[in-house]
Length: 492
Ligand code: ZN
Image (cartoon, rainbow, N blue to C red; front, side, top):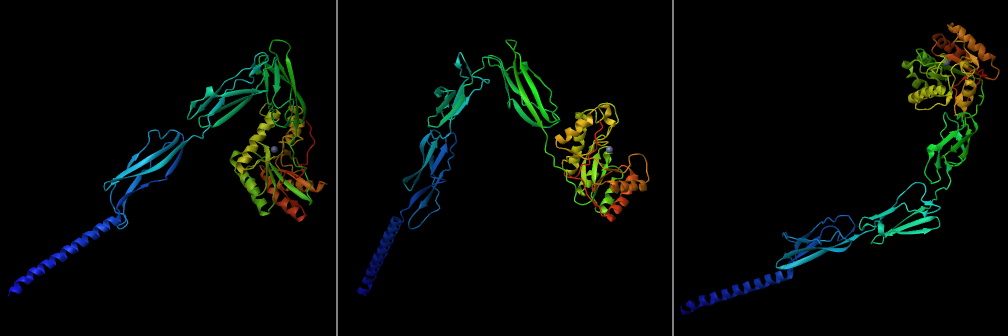
């Protein structure tokens, strides 16, 4: 029994020792694990580690973040506050360091970002302009002034270096970062006598046009002041007629004799494609004075036979102007006749009252054609033809216009067969007969037929004319810039 009472005591001690040993082992193991894990903070700089800024650009800090890291337990989701330190002079030129700090488990950590501020922008160097001259014979070069400014250094005018060499003045300046800028100007002596300088020189060539624009001149008095207002220009140029002209520029300053300069102006014609006779016997149907109430009917007939014609159009019937688009789209020639067709007034309303009046009426119609078709035609027919005598109230106007218009690049077309549809009301059969007789009488293989699509009886004759032409071996064609002009004699 004594043995039985001792045994349990012995057993208890053994258990206690085992427990304590296990606990000690566990503690040692835990300590070893913590030691091995080496828990610490890691700071990561957000964005680029090194930043270079141009002077004046502002620095925006992207910050940094810190994480808890260890070898055994890895990254832990622990919040660690990071504090940033931005140097006060971070916007100044040079190298700066932005620092980030944090503390964790009783230790502090640190990381940095290098910020370099540079200046590669050149200063601005400006020369003041003061008239055409900056030197006089007695005083030499007179500085008109300059200024220099730098974004970093501010006003650098006092540091500009000026060097005079020959007839040039050289300016240079550099900023504190060594950025250089240069400028120069020519020394220009003022005349000691009045002078006229002709812009573009004493001889110029211009293309024929409705008006002449002089390139201009610069006149100076003896002190070099601009005195253009003291110049009188004499001489006549007819800008639409080719030839040599002379202009005289006279400067009278009131002191000493006047200064005179002359300019020779040569007016040359624009190139116009030459006319070529068609290879086959050809009828060019042409219709003047439309579009009008019968134009649509005419277009239908032409379409039915796939015949191309030419329309010399006017704006007399504004409601029908839209048909110009159809004429053009269906492959017909569309050319200028006249805007107003006024060849009857005896005043400035008449298109033949002056070259300028004619040109302005012509251009008005040409612009309408452009508006309706998207193309600028250079083809036209004079109202009444180049042989008209209605214009005789203005003697010689047709002689001038028949030269001036081609000089300016436009091609005039007359006709060699008249349908007679402008001489009062006729039967369509009569118009048909007139055209057939006319076509048969022309000896040179092509007929340019004049009709008017504002005459119903004339339009009604067209189908028969086409049938006759086709069955007699004629080709129908629209006029173009190389087609025959069949010019009339000029009687005014
Ligand atoms: Zn007409």
